[in-house]
Length: 283
Image (cartoon, rainbow, N blue to C red; front, side, top):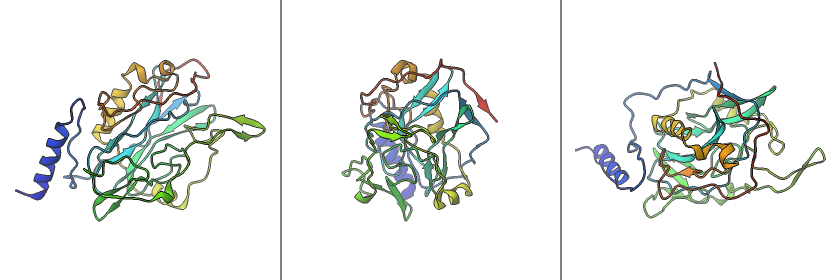
């Protein structure tokens, strides 16, 4: 019996033992075929900006090899809804996640979808927290085919996940209080889009520019299912939760009822700047 088979079987049994969660297939280090390329011709458009990013705690990583995907607002038939942040198995060893981001484009706001790739690319300078502080990812790294977690940033149970290190130099303050821009006081600084008053548009760094020219790979099936299921939960819709989703993050994709799932922390209520509209996709 191969070591790979034993590893996968043990991981599957451990995952199945987690009560109350919807599990994803056990992470393996080999792929029978390369993952599909991302279709970046499809974008979403909204007529007003997304709510500020909610503040929430990160659940612990469920098992070795999983990579954090921060939560993000998406646009649906009732306006914005929240896709919880979650831990996801990458499509293959060495790949990292570039989050999607919103940015203004004329009179509308356009969502640039996330993707997998060899390096973390440009995601609009949005400070999603938990290692995604506006450029790159400092919550972990690949080393000799294993993913190591920076416990200064990532929530990891070190008794069960031992591939860890500590780098406190990457920790950044994710809360900026009152800021004055053009003689206007801006109190809400958890900007959810590029070009917000507290997150001015910037040019990609050299690393981000290099990543833009590399192959970009599509969401995995668990990621896609997580996104689709999030849209069906009324509590995730921004006009219902005033910008504070009851399910802000999960330990695995679609594990909305898992006891380790976390809710958004209290904060100022958000209301849309105009009536919610329909869903639009453009090719």
